Length: 584
Ligand code: PEP
Ligand code: MG
Image 1 (cartoon, rainbow, N blue to C red):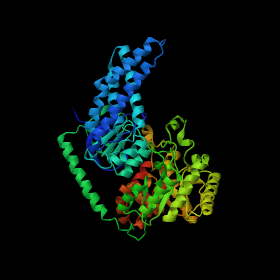
Image 2 (cartoon, rainbow, N blue to C red):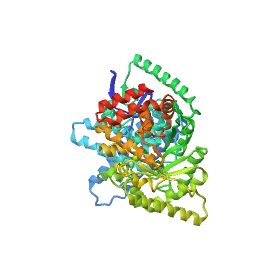
Image 3 (cartoon, rainbow, N blue to C red):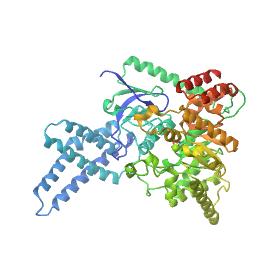
Image 4 (tube, protein in one colour):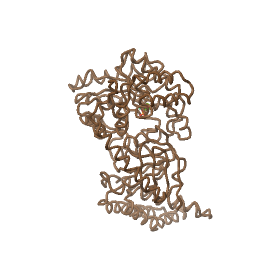
C-alpha cells in the first residue's frame, strides 16, 4: 500500500506510532474497550452465550406465533435465525475478540459494519435490503450483551497491545474517551472535532498524541494500517516507508529524552528571571489525575472538570453520581493533592458534553441550557453536588468554581444555594470549610465586559478561554469546518484578556486562566506580560510552560506587549509576538 499523508488540527503534543484501530461511529452506543489477555476467553464466552440466548429467544417467538400470523413473519424469523447461525456473524466476531482483544460489543459491531459495507456494494435491491436484517440481529445480541455488560472485568491498565494502537474514528464521545483513558492507546485520530472540543481536552490531559478535524480519515485509513501521528504538526502519515518510520522513531526518542530533562524541574518554583513567581496549576478530569498533577510539579488543581464524573455511568446503579459518590471523588482529589488547593468546578454539562444522548436534538446546545443554567434549573442535582464539594473541603483547601455565569441573578442564585447547602450541613453537624472561596468562570464575553458585576460578589475569577473564544468569535470550538477561524490571537480576544486582568487587579481579586491559552507555550510570555500570575493547564504541558517562565525576564516584555495591544492587524500582532520571544 502506498504511503500518504493527512492533515488535521493538532490538539496535543508528541509522536505516536502504531496500528490503526477503527472505531464505529460514536452514534452507535456501544462500549469500546480492550480486554486483558487472560480475560479473552471469558469475553468470547460472553458473546457466545448472548448469541445462544438470542437463538432461544427467536425459537420462543416462533413457537408463540399465533395460528393466523402472516407467513412472512415466520419466514422473517427464519432469516434472522439463519443470519445468527452464519459464521460471519456468530464466529468472525469471536476471532476479533481473540486477535484484537476488543470487548464483545465492539467486536460484534465491527464485524456487522464490515458486512454492511459489503452489502452496500450489492446491486440486487432485495439482497441489499438484507443489511437491515443483519443489523437487527446484531441489535438483539447487543441488547443481551449490554444487560450483562459488566459481568466481565475490564482490562485494568496498560496492555502491550493497546500501547501500539491508534484509535481512528469519525468522532469519539467524551464518554468513550473516558474509557480509553484506562486502555492507554498510543494516539487518537478523528474526522471531527476542533482544538478545544472536549475530546481534544481529554487527549491533551492524558498527554497522548492526537489529531482531530481530519475530514475523512476514518474512511481513508484501513483497519491495522501502520500510522504515524505527528501531533505537533497535525499530520498523520498512513503506511509510512521504513525510512520515514525510522526518522520518526528517532524523533520520538529525542522527545522522550527532552521530557526526562524537563521532569528535573519538578520541584523548581516557576519564577521569572526578574523574580516574579507564576503559579502553575493542573487541570484534571478525574480524581486519579492528581497523580499526574503531582508528578508534573503542579502547585494545585486550577480546574477539576467535575462533569466527567457524571458521564460514562453504565454499570452504576444510579444514572447520576450520589452525594456520597461525589464526595468520595472530591475528597480523593483533595487528599491526592496533599495540601495543595483544588478548584472544583460545578457541573458543566451541555454543548459537546451531553448528559444523555437526547441532548443532541437541542437546536443550539452551546447557547442552551448549559453549565450553571442547567444546574439552576435542576436545583436538587446542584444541591447534591454543592454538599459533596463542601464536605470535601473539610479535608484540605478547596475552592468552588461556577461555570458560564453571565447574569447577576445567576450569581445571586448560586450563592444562595451554596449558603443553603452550608446551612444544611451545619444543621446536620457535618464539617466543611465555612470560608470556602467561590469563584466565577469568565468565559462568556458578557461576563468579561461586565466584570465589576462579579468582583464584588465572588472571591476569585478563572478565565475559560476555550469558551470565551468560541462565544466572542462565534466559532463552534468543536467544529472542524471553522477551526481555522478559531484564533486566540484575534485582537478582540487580546483586548478582552488585557481588560479582564486590569479590572481584576484594580479590584484586587485573584484571576487565573484555566482554558487552553494557559497551556499554549506560544502565549506564555504574552499572558504573564499582561499581568496573569496563575495558569492552569493539562499536567503534561506544565513542565515546558515552567521552563518558558524560568527563561523569561518580564521587564523586557513590556515594550512588545504595548505594540501587540495597540495593533489590530493580525500579521503585525504575530510579528510583535515573535519579537517578544526574542526579547526574553
Ligand atoms: C474553557 O471554556 O476554557 C474551560 C476551561 O472550560 P471547558 O473547556 O471545560 O468548557
Ligand atoms: Mg468552558
